Image (tube, rainbow, N blue to C red; front, side, top):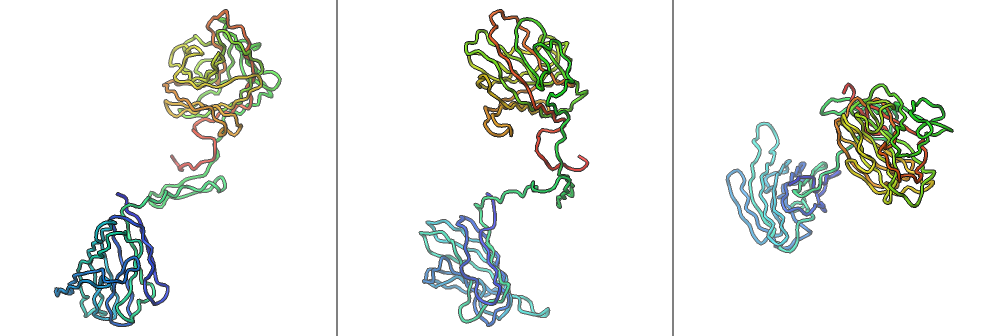
Length: 407
């Protein structure tokens, strides 16, 4: 059960607290503060504009009880003086049942030498066809309630207000403080550890004719011929959390695949000289062209990589000549996700997100390598380029974010 504000009204000038809109909840509570009345009258409540004799109450003031039935209202405070009054009430609000109310109130009886009057009571509205959705706080005669008089109700079936989140339309470097925890945050830009447009070559190749930088892109040519075609870039070290993004373009692919071809892109603890079958730690994606194209979650923990058609999970896709995909790998601790997009914003045209898990560590090398399994029938071409590669170390997102200072 979630309690929340079900309705409220405050007088800006002397008058009556009428037309208070209330949400229809089965269990409710309310508080009502009435500032000094202009004359000595009862303070009363009515529901849903019903002024007919559909109410009854029993009210006790300072030990003296009074009852009344078949009347046009429920008394909140009986007449006793033109003083401030404060009421706390509870009411059940089931549509098909009489609306039952419990009341506890007091009237101030001005001055330190005068004890306040104490009231306690019960009441009911006998309507059995509608829930209470509106209330009026008035008096039994000509008296008015003073300015700042207030009625506030709480309901038991309120959808909580969404938590207020940090704003994102602020300048980088802005600071925020959470008042209850006293924690301080900075609005920061995720730093790019490595951004590579391949206009120059900083990669180390085992066979640059099949895997290597040339002509402003990284060029890949998949061959499952038993030889190691691998290329690496040394990042020196990485953390447990990181993001890798890159643009993949297919430049040559046959419509009639045989045994399939593919390659791997990710991070490894071993350089280019350690190929697909060599023991290593690795996390990345397998790009696989076959009768059914797919990309796969590929990882190794002190072992050779799985074959290109294996992996933790996979997502079908389509690799046509000149097709372009934008790949994103996000590693968070021992788990990682892989998603391919048709849009360069890495949010539109998702082919589907896949997941993997691995305890691989020491992943210092960006690595692109072939599947070394010797398949004599894998002769159909699968070629393309990688470009606009970006690696973010120590984060799991690429957009600006709030970071706790000192965390």
